[in-house]
Each structure stands twice: as structure tokens, then as C-alpha cells.
Length: 178
Image 1 (cartoon, rainbow, N blue to C red):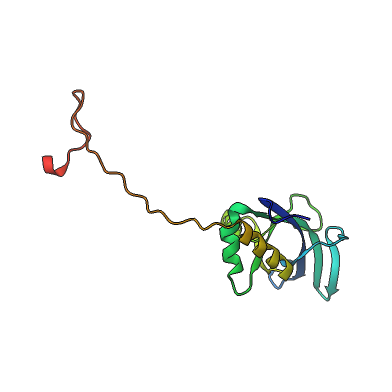
Image 2 (cartoon, rainbow, N blue to C red):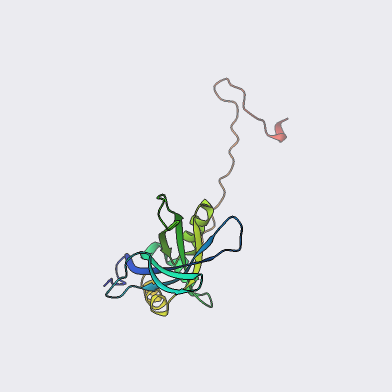
């Protein structure tokens, strides 16, 4: 098991993806991550059916590491301050022509990292509820590693207008000398 004293830890998380029928004429199915959970002793195979009810099927899509790094504690801390902490699941389009159009790519607890994936525009990103044991572990990790960095206002450099040097004309003259 990972220790919170390490600078980076990875928690194995299972991702549940739901496929349901679409009413849209251009898409037969809607795929959406719906849950993430800590992996226990045994792991089901990727894309195994967990539950099927009518035209809604839930799959165990795969296992991904939830990576916590000590430099990300600000984002993790902000996430834990939410009324309901969140995980973000990222699916990418599959390159092969198999039965599943997406493949699990990442799970993160950092909204900053999720925003980076969202900015690319190519990935399917969904907010998921954070399981309580994961929230407790992230809280302990943040308490151990987070150090508040005070804001330091930077002073502007003073503009030093050069006088004419080496026989060349200055690029511009101050208004006071015109």
C-alpha cells in the first residue's frame, strides 16, 4: 500500500462506463463514465458487463491510477473544499475498430488537470462523485504535504531610457525631450 509520506502515490481505481440508447439520429449509443471505485483483491476484466437493464449497460471499463503528487496539493485541497468532492474521468476515442468507441485514459482529482484535458477538446471528461475512502486518503495526503505559499507582489522594473550611444539615434525619444 502507498504511504502518504511519499511525494507521489498512485491509487488503483476502477472506472464504470454506461452505454445507453441515444435518441439522436446520428448516434446509436451514448457513452458516459458514471462511477469510480477503489480496486480490491480481484479485478474484473476490462469491458466486462456489470449490469444490464433494457438498453442501459454498465461496464467495468478498466483500471486506472489516481496519481497524487505533492505539487498538486493546492488543486486537491480546493477539490476537498467542495460540498461533494469530485473525481474526473477521461475517455479518449479508441483507435481500433473494436466494439467500444472509447478507451479509459485517466482519472484525476485535480480540477486543473481535468481542465487541461477539456481544453484539448478531443476527450470525453465527466465529473464523478469521490468515494469516501478516497477523499479521506487525499485529505491525509494534503495535510501531510501542503505548504501555503505566500503571495509576493512583483515590483515592476523601471524603464531606463537610454540616451544616444555610439553615434546611433535612439529608437524613440521621451516626450519630455521632443
